[in-house]
Image (cartoon, rainbow, N blue to C red):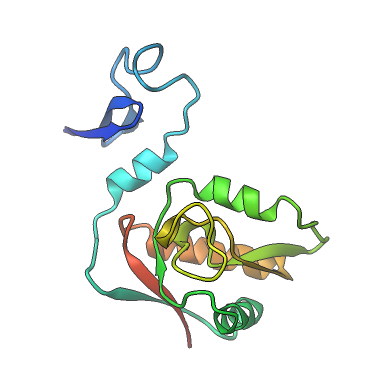
Length: 174
């Protein structure tokens, strides 16, 4: 059994067929005149098509304060600097926001560059560029142990997976 989701985008009408076997596109839907070119990333389309919840309030993403002490410390410091406590899910363009933000910040062996707000949750805050709400690209950056950052990112991704773009959320460490 399959269902078809029709989305209107700036580049035209895109048909995405979601089947139990996975994501596929109808014949002729990629190429000249279709609005999509071969190689177009479909992950964001698939992800937004599979979200199931858009709550009215703010959801709490609960994380372990003992498992993520450096992430927690960075979050608290960033909020004290004026970055928002309440974030907004915005998957569209997250990778580009992250790339632009981290461009001039050198890497360090054994550490990742943690962003708060995360690229997927840019909300209102000091220094936002390219619009307001969840569309800004700037964030606070801190070096945290790679293992901790990657574990936290994976956990956050799993917790946010079912929520649609526009959902408000905040970190809670217990």
